[in-house]
Image 1 (tube, helix red, strand yellow):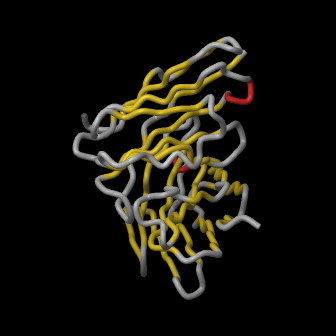
Image 2 (image 1 turned 180 degrees about the vertical axis):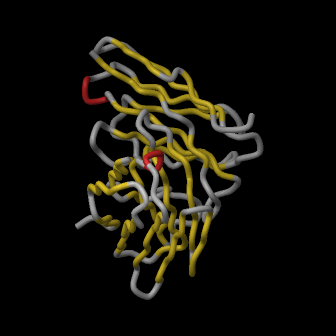
Length: 113
Length: 114
């Protein structure tokens, strides 16, 4: 079983819909990242969370440490939000960056006009 | 520079040839990571540099892979005797320090071994 699981794997929605992407992990972590990967491979770091909630524009990320779960929400979705969204965790005890981040397989989001 | 710069952006090479990929991290970022993403797969950790410490090479898939970093600046990832399974996007990321600092990724090098 992967240490980081994302759902759904694929999501197609209409422009304007509220989008939720979920990430569950099975290890102790010190931080969780949400990344966005556009076609062509470029990766942008969206959020880094260790507790609570963060908001940036139409994007909201939440984390529940007790439940080992994080969600990424997109409000008023737009076709330009179409990308792969990747959840990644930094495991506890990996101080010194021994293995960097552990990645989920990503959620492929398509927003249709 | 303003971001993490990788070169080349695309590389096509013949099986058996050596390739060298370059990463210029953000100035002042002491931590540097190399990752690999094969088609349709998630990101795989390859190697980690932190300042002048010995690198963590635990993710390198074989002894054909090696990487160097000059101080806290440029890093090169070398793949010797390339194989078709080496075809992937190779991504470099840097951060200010290890552990809990945000990462900045480069746009990657797409390597195709024919």
